Amino acid sequence: MYYGFDIGGTKIAFAVYDAELNLCHEERMSTPGDDYLGLQQLIRSRVDAADERFGAKGVVGIGFPGILNRHDGSIVAANLPAIHGRHLGADLAELLGRAVKVDNDANCFLWSEVHQGAAAEADSALGVTIGTGIGGAVYLAGKLIQGRNWLAGEIGHYPLPATILMKYPDLPRPRCGCGRLVCFETYASGTGLERLYLHFHGERASGHQIVARYEAREASALAAIDCWLEILAAGLATAISVLDPDVVVLGGGLSGLPVLYQQLPQRLPGHLLPGVALPAIHQARFGGAGGVRGAALLNL
Image (cartoon, rainbow, N blue to C red; front, side):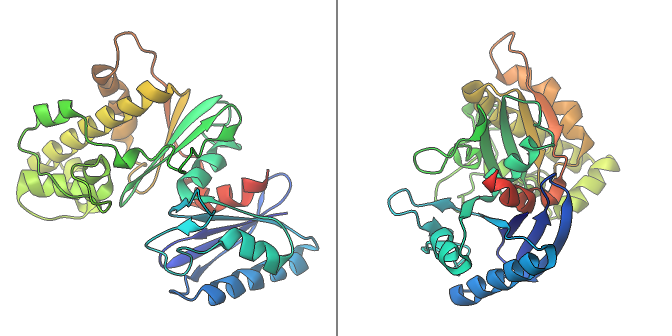
């Protein structure tokens, strides 16, 4: 049996899969603030209950929004004080009496899609999650690529391509949460779309409201999403030029928009070398369950 935990800022998802990767159990629980011991005991209680329920000693995988410190293997997750700076994998392995693997949640998302998902037939893939920020992950030659600093695939934090600033010279220059200016995710994320709408319309609106107004053909929403799509295409083109993947898998809150799959193939060629064959662009098959499912499958 495969047990997965996807640890977020407020919620933890837990799921169990069998040897054929069928979902057998899932639940949600609150993240216990900065209580590291409480978090460990919470995980232990779910693992013990699953062992008893399924009559097996399942393997455990953990996904989290952050990276691993390459010097000592500790977790770097500033928004999760309960695990920031901790050696969660090693500590849980000792507590649970079994191996525990940990990885970034975007990597877990893509790993899930490699196994029976939108990247199942691919030799190489780029996973991109479009939510509050932009997450990214790289799959190549049968494995996830973490990189020296666990930063492989973190496309949200490269600078916005200069061609976009040439095309839209009056765009705002927001400072990213990482401290730098004009990171790709400050425009291409859901938060970025809201920022673009404010820029074009002078009014704040949520992503869902903007999409509804776009579907109603509101001029400001049309302008904001047109710009947003061009930014996405330019940013993805940078990653495609470096990785040349077979497939790009999109996940996150805005990945269900049909216009992405209609427009990106039309816009990408304008940001790539002439004659480049485009990768397939697919919506994630497992949607919001991808993170916890991928965490469970880290032991494959």
